[in-house]
Image (cartoon, rainbow, N blue to C red):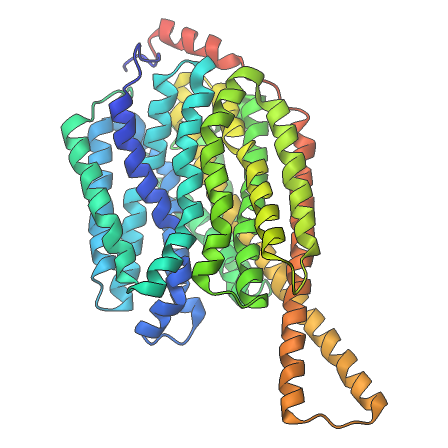
Length: 504
């Protein structure tokens, strides 16, 4: 196997090529969310849970394939793997752009996910290999531009396109950038990541597919079917059993599909846990804030997306700055400041009113995104810095898998809490109004009944959103407590030298 030392001069052109590919893949992850109602109308789909599979299916395929990326990066050359991934992504994008039916569109989305699964891990591993530990913060901050900014601007861009063009344009717009990235990769991409002949354990893939696939499916279905539905808890149980078998098998194999020995490094384990909690916190804001803006305030999708845009821009601008601050000050001070800001801003979102001003909504949401931007990449970088170079592919695969699973489960739990509390409050408010009407002895007209129904719905939605943000405040507080135990990872510097000396 080639040595895993950092390269003398970072391959900046190669990183730019990989960055473009990863940015397109991350953008595609959230680009379709606002367009789902339009797609329902075009394909005459009556059940929202059916069209939701365009998002759920993408997430499922990603969750299943991400654990295999460590093997793929170790076994295959960087250039070949990225080119193949981009070709698959382009095929899926073209299928989705010109889909004659919903079935073809769904398959196209899943093919897209299969191509996109390896792009982020490839870029992250090249960054880890290309920069020494003391400069990785700034480098990973640039990576954060793709990881954080692309999904954040997706809803805004999607809202504008859906409002002015057909939904197909969402995919047609991605195609040229994907093709350019492919051509640049063919022209300029080199093989910089170390490879070795590695065998793949197919039983691990089976356990991984069943475990992560069933768990993500069950949690994604909970928001519509409810946790008491046999399909939901049944698939979750199957998923937990599958993951348990997967974990057990990894420790028994000489060449595991996903080397969980990374968790023997305490700082990686702690950072992985904080990252999981942060994923839940970030997704809560991305789901609940648009729900308030559109469903309670009745603001159009494009305007709603514009209100989220300042937060996305702040996160994008702060990512490289945060990386440099991490290199200088380490993770703890950034995490403490960022999580105090995030927790406080999340709490202020529990105070939303029916007539909260645009300035209040935008400023609190943007401040919250600023807080998250101080934490996300430094935590991930610090965890990876704790690992020896040979575990870098496995560390990045673990981080991506944990983020996907935590985001899915967190989303499902928060949406379920939101739905449950909204229904409870709607029943309570309706009962109060009926009691008041009975006490006054008046009979309401049809217009009054309609107005009261709208009032009940709006008030219940608002209470549900505020309550769920209160739960999210507790989630971010957990991450804040964990951040007190953070230390700057110094193990990787020594471990990389030992690894290089042994020629591993």
